[in-house]
Length: 213
Ligand code: G3P
Image 1 (cartoon, rainbow, N blue to C red):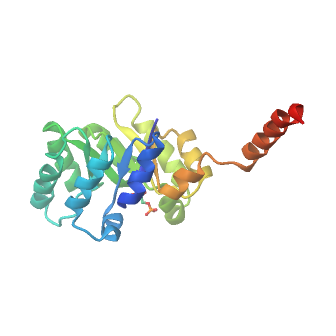
Image 2: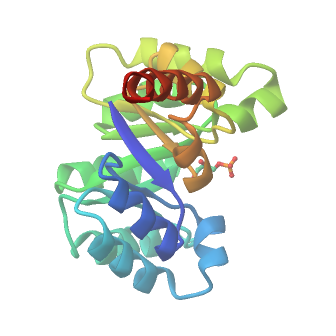
Image 3: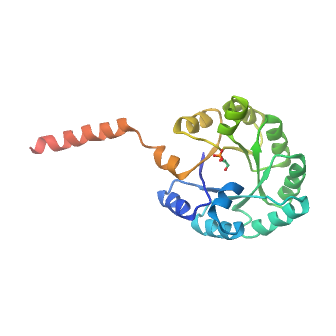
């Protein structure tokens, strides 16, 4: 499975890459706004920070502009810039064209399996359901996620679970069939920590120390 940092903060990205097990970086317009710099500059810096994919969302209001912006972003590294497009009919048409031209596309803010189904048909590399937001707004984001996984069976479209707020929710997303997850740095740093593991380490330490006393 793939494991991404969800952030447009360069310090976060550097720290995440130092860990070695983080595959790339996802961003969204809110995270880019928080970075406080031109989004394409942030994209360039993130591409330098990670050897993996960087997800970059199109925000222009006109379809033509989104198309131009997609090519402008993608030409940096066509095999590493993943163009994020929210799941609308217009963007499905754009995604179809971009995929035909060899660009990587992620259909994002997926809120219903019907959108996942179409994203699979247009050849998106990823779809991103916002699990926690869907749970807050509709009751069961994990159910939406698992239905997306089912409708995409047999396609090459990966389900990237986003908007995950806890270790348990991240695990539940993978159990529901996500093949990729994206989480912020604090959750990345927390996800492999457990107090019982430290208790076990302390017990092992005692066992190691005892014979020499
Ligand atoms: O980047 C997409 C998604 O992970 C955003 O999640 O935390 O704003 O609901 P959030």
